[in-house]
Amino acid sequence: MSIRTLLNDRFRAAMAAAGITGDCNPNIALSTREGFGDYQANGAMAAAKALKMPPRELAQRIVDHVDLDGIAEKLEVAGPGFINIHLSANFLAAAVADQTAQLAVSVRPNATPQTVVVDYSSPNLAKEMHVGHLRSTIIGDAVARVLEYQGHKVIRQNHMGDWGTQFGMLIAELEEQLGSGEKPELALKDLEGFYQQAKKHFDEDEQFATRARNYVVKLQAGDSHCRQLWQLFIDISVAHSEEIYRALNVTLHHGDIRPESAYNDDLAPVITALEKAGLAVEDQGARVVFLDELADKNGNPSPVIVQKSDGGYLYATTDLAALRFRAAELKADRILYFIDARQSLHMKQVFTIARKAGFVDVSVSLEHHPFGTMMGEDGKPFKTRTGGTVKLADLLVEAVERAKHLVADKNPDMAATEQEEVARKVGIGAIKYADLSKTRTNDYIFNWEAMLSFEGNTAPYLQYAYARIRSIFRRAGVTVDSLDTSILITEGQEKQLALKLLQFDDVLQQVAAEAFPHILCNYLYDLASAFMVFYEHCPILKDGVDTEVRASRLQLADITAATLARGLDLLGIEVMEKM
Ligand code: ARG
Image (cartoon, rainbow, N blue to C red):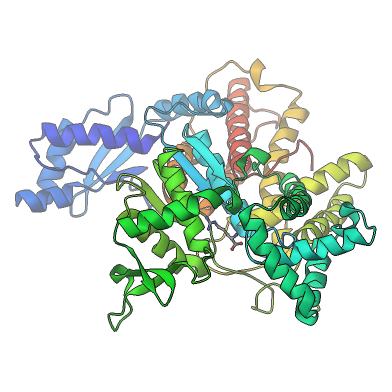
Protein backbone atom coordinates (compact mmCIF):
# COMPACT_ATOMS: atom_id res chain seq x y z
CA MET A 1 0.00 0.00 0.00
CA SER A 2 1.08 3.52 -0.61
CA ILE A 3 0.91 5.63 2.54
CA ARG A 4 1.55 8.69 0.45
CA THR A 5 -1.54 8.03 -1.68
CA LEU A 6 -3.64 7.32 1.38
CA LEU A 7 -2.58 10.55 3.10
CA ASN A 8 -2.99 12.47 -0.11
CA ASP A 9 -6.60 11.31 -0.45
CA ARG A 10 -7.45 12.06 3.16
CA PHE A 11 -5.90 15.52 3.11
CA ARG A 12 -7.48 16.39 -0.21
CA ALA A 13 -10.87 15.59 1.29
CA ALA A 14 -10.01 17.61 4.39
CA MET A 15 -8.98 20.62 2.35
CA ALA A 16 -12.25 20.53 0.46
CA ALA A 17 -14.17 20.13 3.72
CA ALA A 18 -12.27 23.08 5.16
CA GLY A 19 -13.70 25.19 2.37
CA ILE A 20 -10.61 25.44 0.19
CA THR A 21 -11.77 25.59 -3.38
CA GLY A 22 -9.74 25.12 -6.50
CA ASP A 23 -6.85 22.75 -6.84
CA CYS A 24 -5.86 21.54 -3.39
CA ASN A 25 -2.59 19.74 -3.51
CA PRO A 26 -1.85 18.47 -0.01
CA ASN A 27 1.79 18.07 -1.02
CA ILE A 28 2.55 15.01 1.08
CA ALA A 29 6.23 14.35 1.70
CA LEU A 30 8.35 12.18 3.90
CA SER A 31 9.59 14.09 6.92
CA THR A 32 13.20 14.81 6.53
CA ARG A 33 13.99 15.53 10.16
CA GLU A 34 13.50 13.45 13.23
CA GLY A 35 10.85 14.76 15.58
CA PHE A 36 8.81 16.24 12.75
CA GLY A 37 6.56 13.24 12.32
CA ASP A 38 6.81 10.51 9.73
CA TYR A 39 5.17 12.36 6.88
CA GLN A 40 4.26 15.98 6.36
CA ALA A 41 1.44 17.71 4.51
CA ASN A 42 2.95 20.87 3.08
CA GLY A 43 0.04 22.09 0.95
CA ALA A 44 -1.46 24.54 3.46
CA MET A 45 1.02 27.32 2.64
CA ALA A 46 0.19 27.49 -1.06
CA ALA A 47 -3.53 27.21 -0.39
CA ALA A 48 -3.36 29.98 2.22
CA LYS A 49 -1.57 32.23 -0.20
CA ALA A 50 -4.33 31.77 -2.79
CA LEU A 51 -6.99 32.46 -0.14
CA LYS A 52 -4.98 35.32 1.40
CA MET A 53 -5.23 33.68 4.82
CA PRO A 54 -2.65 33.18 7.57
CA PRO A 55 -1.13 29.79 6.69
CA ARG A 56 -0.91 28.39 10.21
CA GLU A 57 -4.57 29.16 10.72
CA LEU A 58 -5.47 27.33 7.53
CA ALA A 59 -3.22 24.43 8.46
CA GLN A 60 -5.05 24.12 11.78
CA ARG A 61 -8.37 24.19 9.98
CA ILE A 62 -7.21 21.30 7.75
CA VAL A 63 -6.06 19.38 10.82
CA ASP A 64 -9.52 19.88 12.35
CA HIS A 65 -11.15 18.40 9.26
CA VAL A 66 -8.88 15.54 8.35
CA ASP A 67 -9.98 12.02 9.13
CA LEU A 68 -6.98 9.94 10.09
CA ASP A 69 -8.67 7.77 12.68
CA GLY A 70 -6.66 4.64 13.18
CA ILE A 71 -3.92 5.97 10.92
CA ALA A 72 -2.21 8.80 12.76
CA GLU A 73 -1.78 9.21 16.48
CA LYS A 74 -0.77 12.84 16.43
CA LEU A 75 -0.91 15.80 14.04
CA GLU A 76 0.78 19.10 14.69
CA VAL A 77 1.09 22.38 12.89
CA ALA A 78 4.69 23.47 12.70
CA GLY A 79 6.75 26.36 11.36
CA PRO A 80 5.01 28.53 8.76
CA GLY A 81 2.21 25.99 8.23
CA PHE A 82 3.58 22.48 7.84
CA ILE A 83 1.45 19.66 9.19
CA ASN A 84 3.51 16.93 10.83
CA ILE A 85 1.93 13.52 10.76
CA HIS A 86 2.88 10.91 13.36
CA LEU A 87 1.54 7.56 12.18
CA SER A 88 0.16 5.09 14.69
CA ALA A 89 2.17 1.98 15.45
CA ASN A 90 -0.86 -0.28 15.06
CA PHE A 91 -1.62 1.12 11.67
CA LEU A 92 1.98 0.58 10.54
CA ALA A 93 1.98 -2.96 11.88
CA ALA A 94 -1.19 -3.86 10.00
CA ALA A 95 -0.02 -2.19 6.79
CA VAL A 96 3.32 -4.01 6.88
CA ALA A 97 1.56 -7.32 7.47
CA ASP A 98 -0.54 -6.66 4.36
CA GLN A 99 2.59 -6.15 2.31
CA THR A 100 3.46 -9.86 2.46
CA ALA A 101 0.46 -10.81 0.36
CA GLN A 102 1.09 -7.94 -2.06
CA LEU A 103 4.68 -9.01 -2.56
CA ALA A 104 3.67 -12.55 -3.37
CA VAL A 105 1.74 -11.69 -6.55
CA SER A 106 3.76 -11.37 -9.73
CA VAL A 107 1.51 -8.65 -11.18
CA ARG A 108 -0.22 -6.00 -9.12
CA PRO A 109 -3.84 -5.15 -9.89
CA ASN A 110 -4.14 -1.88 -11.76
CA ALA A 111 -7.38 0.02 -12.27
CA THR A 112 -5.95 2.16 -15.08
CA PRO A 113 -3.47 -0.02 -16.96
CA GLN A 114 -1.64 1.48 -19.91
CA THR A 115 -0.15 -0.12 -22.99
CA VAL A 116 3.52 0.74 -22.86
CA VAL A 117 5.91 0.02 -25.70
CA VAL A 118 9.51 -0.21 -24.51
CA ASP A 119 12.24 -0.01 -27.17
CA TYR A 120 15.49 -1.26 -25.72
CA SER A 121 18.69 -3.18 -26.41
CA SER A 122 18.21 -2.88 -30.20
CA PRO A 123 21.79 -3.76 -31.20
CA ASN A 124 23.10 -3.49 -34.73
CA LEU A 125 23.55 -7.01 -35.98
CA ALA A 126 26.60 -6.42 -38.14
CA LYS A 127 28.82 -6.89 -35.09
CA GLU A 128 28.77 -8.86 -31.90
CA MET A 129 27.12 -7.19 -28.91
CA HIS A 130 29.61 -4.98 -27.12
CA VAL A 131 29.59 -2.86 -23.99
CA GLY A 132 27.86 -0.05 -25.87
CA HIS A 133 24.71 -2.19 -25.82
CA LEU A 134 24.82 -2.97 -22.13
CA ARG A 135 23.16 0.11 -20.69
CA SER A 136 20.13 0.13 -22.96
CA THR A 137 19.63 -3.58 -22.40
CA ILE A 138 19.67 -3.58 -18.63
CA ILE A 139 18.08 -0.19 -17.92
CA GLY A 140 15.28 -0.84 -20.41
CA ASP A 141 14.72 -4.30 -18.97
CA ALA A 142 14.43 -3.02 -15.40
CA VAL A 143 11.87 -0.40 -16.38
CA ALA A 144 9.91 -2.93 -18.45
CA ARG A 145 9.80 -5.29 -15.46
CA VAL A 146 8.60 -2.55 -13.11
CA LEU A 147 5.85 -1.45 -15.50
CA GLU A 148 4.70 -5.02 -15.95
CA TYR A 149 4.66 -5.62 -12.21
CA GLN A 150 2.54 -2.48 -11.84
CA GLY A 151 -0.09 -4.12 -14.01
CA HIS A 152 0.59 -2.34 -17.28
CA LYS A 153 0.62 -4.09 -20.63
CA VAL A 154 4.25 -3.94 -21.68
CA ILE A 155 5.23 -4.58 -25.28
CA ARG A 156 8.96 -5.00 -25.63
CA GLN A 157 10.42 -3.97 -28.96
CA ASN A 158 13.93 -5.00 -29.86
CA HIS A 159 14.52 -2.70 -32.83
CA MET A 160 17.57 -4.58 -34.09
CA GLY A 161 19.63 -2.97 -36.83
CA ASP A 162 19.58 -5.60 -39.56
CA TRP A 163 19.09 -3.51 -42.67
CA GLY A 164 21.88 -0.98 -43.22
CA THR A 165 24.25 -0.66 -46.19
CA GLN A 166 26.91 -2.73 -44.36
CA PHE A 167 24.86 -5.84 -45.08
CA GLY A 168 25.86 -5.82 -48.75
CA MET A 169 29.47 -6.17 -47.66
CA LEU A 170 28.65 -8.91 -45.16
CA ILE A 171 26.63 -10.91 -47.68
CA ALA A 172 29.41 -10.67 -50.26
CA GLU A 173 31.93 -11.87 -47.68
CA LEU A 174 29.75 -14.74 -46.54
CA GLU A 175 29.13 -15.80 -50.12
CA GLU A 176 32.83 -15.95 -50.72
CA GLN A 177 33.67 -17.89 -47.59
CA LEU A 178 30.86 -20.41 -48.18
CA GLY A 179 32.06 -20.71 -51.79
CA SER A 180 35.40 -21.93 -50.55
CA GLY A 181 33.70 -24.68 -48.56
CA GLU A 182 33.33 -23.07 -45.12
CA LYS A 183 30.29 -23.91 -42.97
CA PRO A 184 28.18 -20.86 -42.03
CA GLU A 185 28.40 -21.51 -38.26
CA LEU A 186 32.19 -21.60 -38.52
CA ALA A 187 32.50 -18.62 -40.83
CA LEU A 188 30.37 -16.61 -38.42
CA LYS A 189 31.75 -18.01 -35.20
CA ASP A 190 33.50 -14.75 -34.48
CA LEU A 191 31.21 -12.04 -35.81
CA GLU A 192 33.62 -9.31 -34.89
CA GLY A 193 36.45 -10.91 -36.84
CA PHE A 194 34.12 -11.60 -39.73
CA TYR A 195 33.10 -7.96 -39.88
CA GLN A 196 36.75 -6.85 -39.87
CA GLN A 197 37.55 -9.24 -42.72
CA ALA A 198 34.60 -8.04 -44.78
CA LYS A 199 35.59 -4.43 -44.18
CA LYS A 200 39.18 -5.06 -45.17
CA HIS A 201 38.04 -6.87 -48.29
CA PHE A 202 35.69 -4.01 -49.13
CA ASP A 203 38.40 -1.38 -48.72
CA GLU A 204 41.06 -3.25 -50.64
CA ASP A 205 39.23 -5.05 -53.44
CA GLU A 206 37.35 -2.83 -55.88
CA GLN A 207 35.50 -5.73 -57.51
CA PHE A 208 34.34 -6.97 -54.12
CA ALA A 209 33.19 -3.48 -53.18
CA THR A 210 31.14 -3.16 -56.34
CA ARG A 211 29.53 -6.52 -55.71
CA ALA A 212 28.79 -5.52 -52.11
CA ARG A 213 27.10 -2.27 -53.19
CA ASN A 214 25.09 -4.15 -55.73
CA TYR A 215 23.99 -6.67 -53.07
CA VAL A 216 22.53 -3.96 -50.85
CA VAL A 217 20.24 -2.86 -53.63
CA LYS A 218 19.32 -6.45 -54.49
CA LEU A 219 18.70 -7.35 -50.88
CA GLN A 220 16.38 -4.41 -50.35
CA ALA A 221 14.56 -5.26 -53.58
CA GLY A 222 13.92 -8.79 -52.28
CA ASP A 223 16.40 -10.85 -54.37
CA SER A 224 16.16 -14.40 -53.02
CA HIS A 225 19.87 -15.31 -53.18
CA CYS A 226 20.87 -12.22 -51.23
CA ARG A 227 17.99 -12.68 -48.87
CA GLN A 228 19.08 -16.25 -48.11
CA LEU A 229 22.66 -15.30 -47.28
CA TRP A 230 21.42 -12.36 -45.26
CA GLN A 231 19.08 -14.63 -43.29
CA LEU A 232 21.96 -16.98 -42.45
CA PHE A 233 23.93 -14.07 -41.14
CA ILE A 234 20.99 -12.66 -39.16
CA ASP A 235 20.05 -15.99 -37.58
CA ILE A 236 23.52 -16.57 -36.20
CA SER A 237 23.85 -12.99 -35.10
CA VAL A 238 20.48 -13.03 -33.31
CA ALA A 239 21.42 -16.29 -31.62
CA HIS A 240 24.54 -14.57 -30.23
CA SER A 241 22.44 -11.76 -28.80
CA GLU A 242 19.99 -14.18 -27.28
CA GLU A 243 22.79 -15.99 -25.53
CA ILE A 244 23.79 -12.69 -23.97
CA TYR A 245 20.21 -11.96 -22.91
CA ARG A 246 20.03 -15.32 -21.18
CA ALA A 247 23.35 -14.81 -19.43
CA LEU A 248 22.27 -11.33 -18.37
CA ASN A 249 18.89 -12.55 -17.12
CA VAL A 250 17.13 -10.10 -19.40
CA THR A 251 13.48 -10.65 -20.34
CA LEU A 252 13.88 -10.07 -24.10
CA HIS A 253 12.63 -12.99 -26.12
CA HIS A 254 12.58 -13.94 -29.75
CA GLY A 255 9.08 -12.59 -30.26
CA ASP A 256 10.17 -9.16 -29.03
CA ILE A 257 12.45 -8.67 -32.00
CA ARG A 258 10.95 -6.38 -34.59
CA PRO A 259 14.03 -5.38 -36.53
CA GLU A 260 14.51 -2.55 -39.00
CA SER A 261 13.87 -4.89 -41.93
CA ALA A 262 10.32 -5.48 -40.67
CA TYR A 263 9.48 -1.93 -41.73
CA ASN A 264 10.90 -2.19 -45.24
CA ASP A 265 7.52 -2.18 -46.95
CA ASP A 266 6.33 0.79 -44.90
CA LEU A 267 9.12 3.14 -45.91
CA ALA A 268 7.74 4.29 -49.27
CA PRO A 269 4.28 4.89 -47.79
CA VAL A 270 5.88 6.91 -44.97
CA ILE A 271 7.49 9.19 -47.55
CA THR A 272 4.19 9.54 -49.41
CA ALA A 273 2.42 10.44 -46.17
CA LEU A 274 5.10 13.00 -45.30
CA GLU A 275 4.74 14.57 -48.73
CA LYS A 276 0.97 14.66 -48.49
CA ALA A 277 1.24 16.38 -45.13
CA GLY A 278 3.45 18.96 -46.79
CA LEU A 279 6.37 18.02 -44.59
CA ALA A 280 8.84 16.29 -46.92
CA VAL A 281 10.16 18.43 -49.76
CA GLU A 282 12.69 17.79 -52.47
CA ASP A 283 16.12 19.19 -51.82
CA GLN A 284 18.99 18.43 -54.22
CA GLY A 285 17.34 15.18 -55.25
CA ALA A 286 16.75 14.02 -51.69
CA ARG A 287 13.54 14.17 -49.63
CA VAL A 288 13.99 16.33 -46.58
CA VAL A 289 11.81 17.55 -43.70
CA PHE A 290 12.80 20.97 -42.36
CA LEU A 291 11.84 21.49 -38.74
CA ASP A 292 11.46 25.06 -37.45
CA GLU A 293 10.77 23.61 -34.01
CA LEU A 294 14.38 22.49 -33.79
CA ALA A 295 15.96 25.48 -35.50
CA ASP A 296 19.52 26.44 -34.55
CA LYS A 297 20.30 29.75 -32.86
CA ASN A 298 20.43 31.55 -36.20
CA GLY A 299 16.92 30.39 -36.97
CA ASN A 300 17.88 27.80 -39.59
CA PRO A 301 15.42 24.92 -39.47
CA SER A 302 16.78 21.48 -38.60
CA PRO A 303 16.96 19.33 -41.77
CA VAL A 304 16.02 15.66 -41.54
CA ILE A 305 16.74 13.58 -44.63
CA VAL A 306 14.12 10.89 -45.01
CA GLN A 307 15.15 9.60 -48.45
CA LYS A 308 18.50 9.93 -50.14
CA SER A 309 18.86 11.03 -53.74
CA ASP A 310 19.65 7.42 -54.76
CA GLY A 311 16.29 6.37 -53.33
CA GLY A 312 17.73 4.81 -50.15
CA TYR A 313 15.98 5.34 -46.83
CA LEU A 314 17.54 6.29 -43.52
CA TYR A 315 17.57 5.42 -39.84
CA ALA A 316 15.02 8.20 -39.22
CA THR A 317 12.66 6.87 -41.91
CA THR A 318 12.59 3.46 -40.26
CA ASP A 319 11.98 5.04 -36.87
CA LEU A 320 9.04 6.97 -38.28
CA ALA A 321 7.58 3.77 -39.69
CA ALA A 322 8.12 2.07 -36.33
CA LEU A 323 6.41 4.92 -34.47
CA ARG A 324 3.43 4.77 -36.77
CA PHE A 325 3.20 1.02 -36.19
CA ARG A 326 3.51 1.37 -32.43
CA ALA A 327 0.78 3.98 -32.23
CA ALA A 328 -1.64 2.53 -34.78
CA GLU A 329 -1.13 -1.22 -34.47
CA LEU A 330 0.23 -1.73 -30.98
CA LYS A 331 -2.09 1.02 -29.65
CA ALA A 332 0.49 2.34 -27.26
CA ASP A 333 -0.36 4.90 -24.59
CA ARG A 334 3.32 5.47 -23.88
CA ILE A 335 6.35 4.70 -26.05
CA LEU A 336 9.68 4.58 -24.22
CA TYR A 337 13.08 4.58 -25.90
CA PHE A 338 16.22 3.62 -24.03
CA ILE A 339 18.94 4.97 -26.29
CA ASP A 340 22.28 6.65 -25.75
CA ALA A 341 22.12 10.40 -25.10
CA ARG A 342 24.06 10.96 -28.32
CA GLN A 343 20.89 10.12 -30.23
CA SER A 344 18.85 12.83 -28.51
CA LEU A 345 18.59 15.05 -31.57
CA HIS A 346 17.59 12.09 -33.71
CA MET A 347 14.78 11.22 -31.28
CA LYS A 348 13.58 14.82 -31.10
CA GLN A 349 13.44 14.98 -34.88
CA VAL A 350 11.57 11.72 -35.19
CA PHE A 351 9.06 12.65 -32.45
CA THR A 352 8.44 16.08 -33.94
CA ILE A 353 7.87 14.74 -37.45
CA ALA A 354 5.63 11.94 -36.18
CA ARG A 355 3.44 14.43 -34.33
CA LYS A 356 3.24 16.86 -37.23
CA ALA A 357 2.42 14.11 -39.69
CA GLY A 358 -0.31 12.83 -37.39
CA PHE A 359 1.34 9.41 -37.02
CA VAL A 360 1.04 9.68 -33.25
CA ASP A 361 -1.81 11.33 -31.40
CA VAL A 362 -1.05 13.98 -28.77
CA SER A 363 -2.50 11.69 -26.11
CA VAL A 364 0.36 9.24 -26.64
CA SER A 365 3.42 9.97 -24.55
CA LEU A 366 6.70 9.78 -26.51
CA GLU A 367 9.70 9.49 -24.22
CA HIS A 368 13.37 9.23 -24.96
CA HIS A 369 15.13 8.12 -21.78
CA PRO A 370 18.76 8.77 -22.56
CA PHE A 371 21.82 7.51 -20.75
CA GLY A 372 25.47 8.44 -20.61
CA THR A 373 28.51 6.45 -21.63
CA MET A 374 30.20 3.64 -19.75
CA MET A 375 33.74 4.82 -19.00
CA GLY A 376 36.92 3.04 -18.08
CA GLU A 377 38.82 3.96 -14.94
CA ASP A 378 40.90 6.35 -17.02
CA GLY A 379 37.74 8.38 -17.60
CA LYS A 380 37.64 7.52 -21.30
CA PRO A 381 35.05 5.30 -22.98
CA PHE A 382 35.52 1.72 -21.79
CA LYS A 383 37.95 -0.22 -24.02
CA THR A 384 40.12 -3.32 -23.92
CA ARG A 385 43.75 -2.92 -22.86
CA THR A 386 44.71 -2.69 -26.50
CA GLY A 387 42.04 -0.09 -27.20
CA GLY A 388 39.48 -2.38 -28.87
CA THR A 389 35.76 -2.58 -28.11
CA VAL A 390 34.98 -4.95 -25.27
CA LYS A 391 32.72 -7.83 -26.25
CA LEU A 392 29.83 -8.21 -23.89
CA ALA A 393 30.25 -11.98 -23.80
CA ASP A 394 33.83 -11.60 -22.53
CA LEU A 395 32.82 -9.04 -19.94
CA LEU A 396 30.18 -11.34 -18.49
CA VAL A 397 32.61 -14.26 -18.33
CA GLU A 398 35.10 -12.08 -16.47
CA ALA A 399 32.43 -10.92 -14.00
CA VAL A 400 31.49 -14.48 -13.07
CA GLU A 401 35.15 -15.49 -12.91
CA ARG A 402 35.96 -12.67 -10.49
CA ALA A 403 32.89 -13.43 -8.39
CA LYS A 404 33.96 -17.07 -8.21
CA HIS A 405 37.14 -16.15 -6.37
CA LEU A 406 35.25 -14.01 -3.89
CA VAL A 407 32.65 -16.68 -3.23
CA ALA A 408 35.27 -19.39 -2.80
CA ASP A 409 37.17 -17.19 -0.33
CA LYS A 410 34.08 -16.50 1.74
CA ASN A 411 32.60 -19.99 1.60
CA PRO A 412 35.39 -22.54 1.35
CA ASP A 413 32.98 -25.24 2.56
CA MET A 414 30.27 -24.63 0.00
CA ALA A 415 29.87 -27.32 -2.66
CA ALA A 416 31.51 -26.43 -5.95
CA THR A 417 28.27 -26.48 -7.93
CA GLU A 418 26.64 -24.14 -5.45
CA GLN A 419 29.67 -21.85 -5.53
CA GLU A 420 29.31 -21.63 -9.30
CA GLU A 421 25.65 -20.77 -9.07
CA VAL A 422 26.25 -18.11 -6.44
CA ALA A 423 29.15 -16.69 -8.44
CA ARG A 424 26.99 -16.41 -11.52
CA LYS A 425 24.31 -14.49 -9.64
CA VAL A 426 26.82 -12.26 -7.89
CA GLY A 427 28.93 -11.51 -10.96
CA ILE A 428 26.03 -10.73 -13.27
CA GLY A 429 24.15 -8.94 -10.51
CA ALA A 430 27.20 -6.76 -9.79
CA ILE A 431 27.55 -5.60 -13.40
CA LYS A 432 23.87 -4.82 -13.70
CA TYR A 433 23.51 -3.12 -10.35
CA ALA A 434 26.58 -0.94 -10.83
CA ASP A 435 24.93 0.47 -13.91
CA LEU A 436 21.35 0.62 -12.63
CA SER A 437 22.29 2.33 -9.37
CA LYS A 438 23.81 5.37 -11.11
CA THR A 439 21.64 8.21 -12.35
CA ARG A 440 21.38 7.00 -15.92
CA THR A 441 21.76 10.39 -17.57
CA ASN A 442 25.36 10.65 -16.34
CA ASP A 443 28.39 8.85 -17.71
CA TYR A 444 29.63 6.26 -15.26
CA ILE A 445 32.93 4.64 -14.49
CA PHE A 446 33.15 0.88 -14.74
CA ASN A 447 35.09 -0.45 -11.77
CA TRP A 448 35.33 -4.15 -10.89
CA GLU A 449 36.41 -3.70 -7.27
CA ALA A 450 33.63 -1.25 -6.46
CA MET A 451 30.86 -3.26 -8.08
CA LEU A 452 31.93 -6.54 -6.47
CA SER A 453 32.37 -5.08 -3.01
CA PHE A 454 30.26 -6.53 -0.22
CA GLU A 455 29.98 -3.10 1.33
CA GLY A 456 28.17 -0.05 0.08
CA ASN A 457 25.43 0.30 -2.49
CA THR A 458 26.22 -2.83 -4.52
CA ALA A 459 24.47 -5.99 -5.65
CA PRO A 460 26.60 -8.27 -3.41
CA TYR A 461 25.68 -6.15 -0.38
CA LEU A 462 21.97 -6.51 -1.10
CA GLN A 463 22.21 -10.18 -2.01
CA TYR A 464 24.10 -10.71 1.22
CA ALA A 465 21.47 -8.82 3.22
CA TYR A 466 18.87 -11.15 1.77
CA ALA A 467 20.90 -14.31 2.45
CA ARG A 468 21.57 -13.14 5.98
CA ILE A 469 17.86 -12.88 6.74
CA ARG A 470 17.29 -16.33 5.29
CA SER A 471 20.00 -17.66 7.57
CA ILE A 472 18.19 -16.23 10.60
CA PHE A 473 15.25 -18.42 9.68
CA ARG A 474 17.46 -21.44 9.22
CA ARG A 475 19.00 -20.90 12.62
CA ALA A 476 15.62 -20.31 14.23
CA GLY A 477 14.42 -23.52 12.63
CA VAL A 478 11.09 -21.93 11.72
CA THR A 479 9.30 -20.92 8.56
CA VAL A 480 7.33 -17.73 8.43
CA ASP A 481 4.02 -19.57 7.91
CA SER A 482 4.25 -20.97 11.40
CA LEU A 483 4.21 -17.45 12.87
CA ASP A 484 0.61 -16.43 13.10
CA THR A 485 0.98 -13.79 15.77
CA SER A 486 0.66 -10.15 14.83
CA ILE A 487 3.42 -7.65 14.27
CA LEU A 488 4.23 -5.39 17.21
CA ILE A 489 5.92 -2.08 16.68
CA THR A 490 7.38 -0.66 19.84
CA GLU A 491 11.04 0.16 19.27
CA GLY A 492 12.11 3.12 17.17
CA GLN A 493 14.13 0.84 14.87
CA GLU A 494 11.09 -1.32 14.28
CA LYS A 495 9.11 1.74 13.32
CA GLN A 496 11.83 2.99 10.99
CA LEU A 497 12.02 -0.39 9.28
CA ALA A 498 8.23 -0.54 8.91
CA LEU A 499 8.14 2.97 7.41
CA LYS A 500 10.86 2.01 4.95
CA LEU A 501 9.08 -1.16 3.92
CA LEU A 502 5.93 0.81 3.27
CA GLN A 503 7.68 3.16 0.85
CA PHE A 504 8.13 0.36 -1.67
CA ASP A 505 4.98 1.14 -3.67
CA ASP A 506 5.73 4.86 -3.90
CA VAL A 507 9.21 4.06 -5.16
CA LEU A 508 7.87 1.74 -7.85
CA GLN A 509 5.36 4.34 -8.95
CA GLN A 510 8.14 6.84 -9.32
CA VAL A 511 10.33 4.43 -11.29
CA ALA A 512 7.42 3.59 -13.59
CA ALA A 513 6.71 7.27 -14.19
CA GLU A 514 10.26 8.55 -14.61
CA ALA A 515 12.12 5.46 -15.82
CA PHE A 516 14.98 5.96 -13.36
CA PRO A 517 15.94 2.57 -11.87
CA HIS A 518 18.50 4.14 -9.52
CA ILE A 519 15.56 5.31 -7.39
CA LEU A 520 14.72 1.67 -6.72
CA CYS A 521 18.39 0.83 -6.08
CA ASN A 522 18.75 3.61 -3.53
CA TYR A 523 15.58 2.48 -1.85
CA LEU A 524 16.76 -1.13 -1.55
CA TYR A 525 20.06 0.03 -0.16
CA ASP A 526 18.28 2.18 2.44
CA LEU A 527 16.00 -0.71 3.28
CA ALA A 528 18.91 -3.11 3.79
CA SER A 529 20.62 -0.50 5.96
CA ALA A 530 17.44 0.06 8.01
CA PHE A 531 17.29 -3.69 8.52
CA MET A 532 20.89 -3.85 9.73
CA VAL A 533 20.17 -1.11 12.29
CA PHE A 534 17.00 -2.88 13.39
CA TYR A 535 18.80 -6.20 13.70
CA GLU A 536 21.50 -4.68 15.84
CA HIS A 537 19.10 -3.03 18.28
CA CYS A 538 16.27 -5.53 18.26
CA PRO A 539 17.58 -9.02 18.96
CA ILE A 540 15.60 -11.87 17.46
CA LEU A 541 17.18 -15.16 18.42
CA LYS A 542 18.92 -14.11 21.63
CA ASP A 543 17.89 -15.77 24.90
CA GLY A 544 15.37 -13.81 26.86
CA VAL A 545 13.48 -12.37 23.90
CA ASP A 546 9.79 -12.78 24.50
CA THR A 547 8.17 -15.32 22.12
CA GLU A 548 5.69 -12.83 20.74
CA VAL A 549 8.35 -10.21 20.19
CA ARG A 550 10.53 -12.79 18.53
CA ALA A 551 7.71 -13.89 16.22
CA SER A 552 6.96 -10.28 15.36
CA ARG A 553 10.59 -9.51 14.55
CA LEU A 554 10.88 -12.64 12.47
CA GLN A 555 7.94 -11.43 10.43
CA LEU A 556 9.50 -8.02 9.96
CA ALA A 557 12.65 -9.80 8.81
CA ASP A 558 10.71 -11.97 6.41
CA ILE A 559 8.89 -9.02 4.83
CA THR A 560 12.20 -7.24 4.47
CA ALA A 561 13.66 -10.26 2.67
CA ALA A 562 10.62 -10.51 0.42
CA THR A 563 10.82 -6.80 -0.43
CA LEU A 564 14.53 -7.07 -1.20
CA ALA A 565 13.96 -10.13 -3.37
CA ARG A 566 11.09 -8.52 -5.25
CA GLY A 567 12.97 -5.27 -5.72
CA LEU A 568 16.08 -7.05 -6.99
CA ASP A 569 13.96 -9.22 -9.25
CA LEU A 570 12.50 -6.05 -10.78
CA LEU A 571 16.07 -5.01 -11.51
CA GLY A 572 16.70 -8.41 -13.09
CA ILE A 573 19.01 -9.52 -10.26
CA GLU A 574 18.76 -12.92 -8.60
CA VAL A 575 19.10 -13.73 -4.90
CA MET A 576 20.26 -16.88 -3.12
CA GLU A 577 19.57 -18.53 0.20
CA LYS A 578 23.24 -18.77 1.15
CA MET A 579 26.16 -16.65 0.19
N1 ARG B 1 20.46 0.10 -33.47
C1 ARG B 1 20.64 1.39 -32.90
C2 ARG B 1 22.08 1.56 -32.44
O1 ARG B 1 22.74 0.58 -32.15
C3 ARG B 1 19.75 1.65 -31.73
C4 ARG B 1 18.28 1.59 -32.05
C5 ARG B 1 17.45 2.21 -30.99
N2 ARG B 1 16.05 2.20 -31.28
C6 ARG B 1 15.46 2.93 -32.21
N3 ARG B 1 14.17 2.78 -32.40
N4 ARG B 1 16.11 3.85 -32.89
O2 ARG B 1 22.53 2.68 -32.32
